[in-house]
Length: 266
Image (cartoon, rainbow, N blue to C red):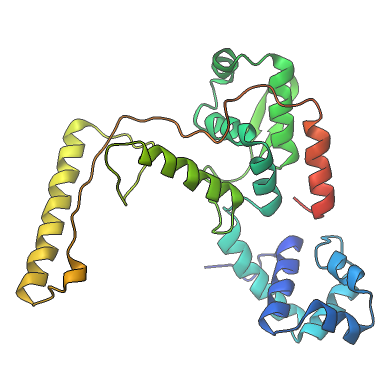
């Protein structure tokens, strides 16, 4: 349950306003004409987290929602999306897939940065570029000598529209297609002993047979419900987004900052 004292972040207030405008079937052009503001200014304001309160109130009136209602919508969006990579993080990771590979591996090997450096041939300067880029994205807090601490949840999710998520699905699909068989149930990085795997197999088989027998008894035997099922497990193999975690280009920080500047917020 969300606390009534919780405050929505500016980016979610703007997201709620944009969603309200869309839900009401109002075009940006119509709203701009109604309020007597240039279309370019309206679009910029709706993505600017430093928007003045009076301007926000004006747009709320145009969208037919008061500030209290907008805040409630924003809180719901914030609660739903807080554990998702935001749009700019997704864009940067898609542009620099090795940066995401580095971040994901660092999450699982927080105390093994020196081993990662040895494994991928990264000197301190190359490592700093990775860490500094992650700091700019708001994912870590960077200290001296490449010491760092993570910010945010341990697990981030990818939205359905995420370019990074689509790339992940593509990479995973390509890996599965190379396998002898394919499956619809896919779990990665699972720590399971042989005994536990056997137990899961037994439970899964029992549930499949129970459901099958129930359908047979109740006459639910439509031809299009007939299935061949096969599940298998393999030893873990990393799914990489990039060709490998190698030194980032020297202009990566400027390019990341430019992407953030163009978007208006992280």
